[in-house]
Image (cartoon, rainbow, N blue to C red; front, side, top):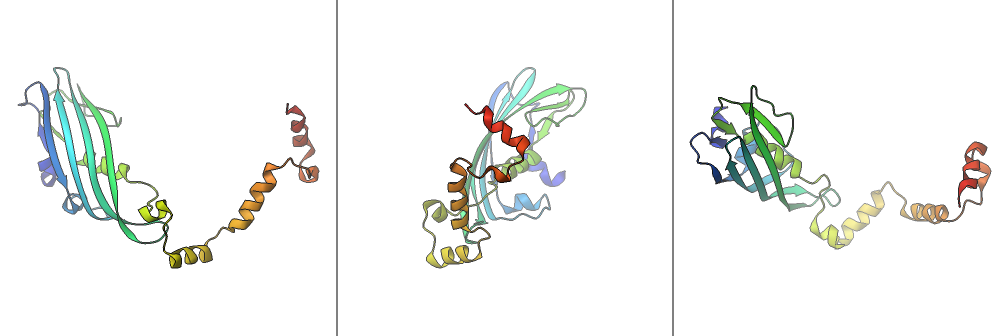
Length: 189
């Protein structure tokens, strides 16, 4: 835990009310976790509004930054913007429990809170599942790339459009339908 000590918040000496913390996250932060990532050049600013109350702690994390990723469609690298806001409530109890993502319980005698793992998880869960280059979203794909995508696509787009047109019409060809299911068509208004 020594390598993560920069992310300790010692709340025992803080006054009641809100205290602001800021963290700059780069690749060195992700290296602390020794997990391989599929992005480059992470640059995040994490603003933490830490509110100490008499019976609990409330943290609001605001994540803003960029990572360099490969587009899932074109294979080009681009900077993906990431932003997210998450709230965490920390209550006091007999033993540590962080199984709930929104409410943590820490022991009564605890005087500090390490948020490194939480920052890591918040960033990783804020990453989009599908990464699309802004050019793809605008419809401005390089003609060569578009041609390659059409050539190697596993979908026959004309065939899919024909199927959609056929499914919109009433099923005139009921010969293929199991007679038990065909009775359900009688229930239509």
